[in-house]
Each structure stands twice: as C-alpha cells, then as structure tokens.
Image (tube, rainbow over all chains, first blue to last red; front, top):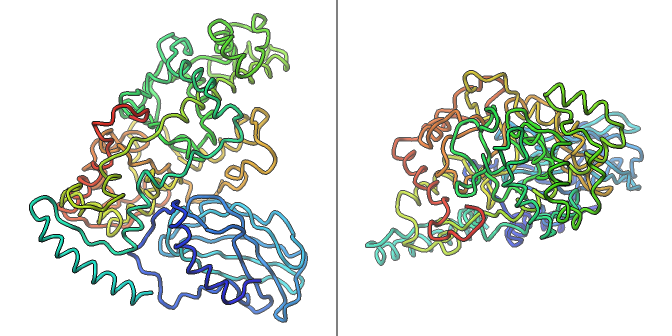
Amino acid sequence: MLTLTSRRALLLGIPALVLAGGIVTAGAMMRSVPSDLDLALEKPTAAGLYKAAIAPQTNPVSVGSMHAWTVTVLTPTGAPIKAAKIGINGGMPQHGHGLPTAPQVTKDLGGGRYLIEGMKFNMRGWWTLDLAIDGPKGADTVTFNLVL
Amino acid sequence: MRRAAAILSSVLFGAGLLAAGLHAASAPAVRWTEEERAIIRSLALDALPPLPTDPSNRVADDPRAAELGRALFFDVRLSANGQVACATCHLPERQFQDDVPLARGVGTTTRRTMPIAGMAHSPFLFWDGRADSLWSQALGPLESPVEHGGNRTQYAHVIAEHYRERYEAVFGPLPETVKFPPQAGPVADPDATRAWEAMPEADREAVNRVFANIGKAIAAFERTITPAPTRFDAYASTLGAGILNEDEVAGLRLFIGKGECVNCHNGPLLTDNHFHNTGVPAASGLPKDLGRAAGAKLVREDPFNCLGPYSDAGEGDCSELRFMAADGHELLRAYKTPSLRGAAGRPPYMHAGQIPTLADVVAHYSAAPAAPAGHSELRPLNLSETERRQLIAFLATLNPDPDDKGRNGF
C-alpha cells in the first residue's frame, strides 16, 4: 500500500524521473489539466463498497513502453478482497480516446493484490484508469487520474 | 513548483531579451519554459533509447544475418518476374521509400510505401499494424500478388541455390529443397496454392521455417537502418541561437503547442507508434479500407506473429500482441502515426499517398474534416496562413542533414 509520502513522490516523480531517464515523449502540454483533479492513487470505490489502490511495478512510468501495475482491493476497513474480478478501461478525457492497449489482470498476488499487465500510455497528459471491481460485496467502480 | 516555474520563466524572459539584443543579426534567441525545453529535448535523436531486443528473432542482432538480409533485400530473384526486390520500393537513396502514392511491385498496391529508418523501435508494422515484427512484416510483400508476387517454395529454392552457405551459417541446415515443387505457397495464384496443399505437412512446415528465416535475416539488416541527425537535433541539444530561423522556431512552438502535433508525433522518432483516425479522406478508386480495425485482426491470426510457431519468443514475451487493443470503434480507419523524420522530403502523404503536399497535410490538420468512416480524433486548429507556413518550415528541419551522407537511414 502506498503511503501519502510515496504517493506524492510518485505523482511528482513521474515526469521528473521520466525526463531523467531520457525516454520521455511529449504530450498535450498546452491543454490545461483541471486544477482540482483528484490525483490520489488510493481511494474508496464509487459506491463505497471497497477501497482500491494502484501502483506501477516499475518506476519511472515512461510514455510509450509497456508496464505492469498492481491494484490492491480492500474492504472499507482494510481487509483484503480475495478473488475479485477486475475490468480495466480508461483513456484521455481531453482527447476523447481510450487506452492504446487492452490491459488485463493476469495474476492474483494474494492479500487483495492483483497484477495488471499490458498498460501503456502513448502520450503525455491527463489519463484516467477506470477499474470495474466485482467482489463479494457486489460490483463497484473506481476511476484514478494520472498526469504524465 | 508553479511559483518556481514563473520565476524561472521571467528569468529566462530577461535572458531572452538580452540574448535577442546580442544575436539580433543572426537569429532570434528564444524563450522556452522548462516544460517546453523538456518536450523539445524529448524529441531529439540523442533521446532515442537503444534498439529494443526482438525476442521473436534470435538472429536479430547477428551481423552474419544482417549481411544475408542485406543481400536478400536487393535480390530481384525473390519475385515472380525477376524484377522486384524489397529495394524496388524501399529505395535506400530515397529514405527507403519510392515517392509515389501507391507502391508498385509486379502490380500496384493499395498503400504508400513506408520508410524503414528506426522502424525496429515500432511494435507494429504496416500502416494498419498487421505485422508485429520486422521479420513478419518482410514476409507480407514477398507473398503479395502485387508486390513480389512469388511464393514460399520458390524462395526456398532461391536460398538453396544462391545463399546455401550463408544461410546455413546462420540458421543451420536447409531442408532438402529438391523435393519441393518449384512454385508452391498459400498465395493468390491457384496453381501455387494447389501445389502447396498437395505437399506433406512436414514439408510445408520445413518451407515455412525457411520462409520465416528469410524474414529474420531481412529484419536483422533493417535493424541497422537508423535515422540520421538533423538540424532540429542540433537545435534541441543546445537550444542555441543561429541554428533555426525565426519561422522554424515559431513552427516548433506551434508543433508542441497550439498545433498539438506532438500529442501523437512524440518521442525522438516523432511517432507514438499507435494508430489514429485523423479523418484522412478515402483514396478514390481503392477498395474500402478499415485500417487498424482490419490490421489488429490480421496480426492476431498471423502464423508468423510473436506467439506463433516460427517465433523464437519465450513465455512472457509478446506483451504488445497479448495486450493489443483489438476491438472498438477507435480502430476504424485508424492508421499508424508515421515518423516525421525526413517526412518533409518525401511527399506524397498518408496511407495511400492521397495528400500530395506538406502544405495540404497541414491544411488538413488545421481544418479537421470529418472522417469518411469512424470518427476523426482531430479538432479544427484554424491555423493562419503564417502559422501553416511556420509549421512547414519547422518540419523541414527534421530532414536529414545533407552533409551527413554516410548514415544508413538516408
């Protein structure tokens, strides 16, 4: 699970680390991202059935390459949700297009953690990652915002 | 951070004014924000990562395979009429393309020839991405009835007769080719198809391996074809005055700003390697073209893809294919974002060469017409005549340096 500090490090770190890595590609810089955008990588699902968190498996998250993420699904009180079914969608709200790939959960890592493979961002800017979570308490959704 | 950026930009602004005074005679000094500088640097050739490995081709980086591939690339015996080689359309002195709207082999194709430099960085090849490696891409034209027009056993015989030693040094023993029919393969020619179907499965399998290896050798050669540095690269590394003129700098500003070109034309090759519907008009007289919507299905079914029996990839490789977006309305008439390196010097444009000049291309992106099918991702930019001229001026800075003739790419 990400701490507040590491979350901040990740959010601020994505562009900086990618730049440092020399593999950055550029994106829609002139279209402004909403200033009140919720950038939390850990949040309750829309109907409050679960708490979900996402984290990239490798840093930096570079534009244009495949990478894996983990998603953690917990009850609101923090107990792991086992055997959840998770659908992944997303895209760039300002461009009106979806994800360039079709990522999938490929492994149940235990303790409510799941491996998502096949993630890719093909341009910089504001991305959303929408998870449809089906678990023992029912189906719920959650949307994460990422700015690369 | 914002405050820091604001302070920084005012410092840069001041420096810019000063520099403008100092260099007014040569070229204007330019103010860029830190963010803009980062974007510009991200487009420079020196930001290009090393060639990605190709686990599906175990000889991808074998120099002997590249030498064999080079010979095959120029060999007109690999065609139905003895007159067509890869180099017939991929002309080395013309950025490995042919300057015509539709490629001409033994017949005329429905697509514009794509250049080769830097293509080893691309997970999917062809305008519709119907191949997922350089080697499987190379196999398509060999069997196309309007490109090389030949067939698999014909090519196996060419290898046995003219390349046996070099082939076997890289790939091991050739099968006993004398027993294969002279002309056989799953191609448009009904006689060759019948002959192919009459062959024992084991023989077909052996021929398929030779065929795949032809592609792997050509791919090893193509991996050595790399883009050459440009005037833009010189500018990006220093952002110094006197490298680009005022119009070119203004064009660069539009490219990464108002024009939003950099959304898709990003990274050192100025492509996101993805597929987009940008409302390009259908080419008149050609059959209906679905673009990526067809290409995604074709690559998934291709026996020569990364997951197929002729691939050297291991378990866990092939993530591009395994997690490829294969469905959805966004794929309809979506075509691969081409690299813009050298693009100003190789009209005509688009997947069927249907837009004749760069000025027409920029006008298209400014106007953002509706797509003939599917939905265009574009929105009108309403660029002025001056802005369009500036964008074109910037694009020309991505042409290879004419003094740098020693490079493979151009």
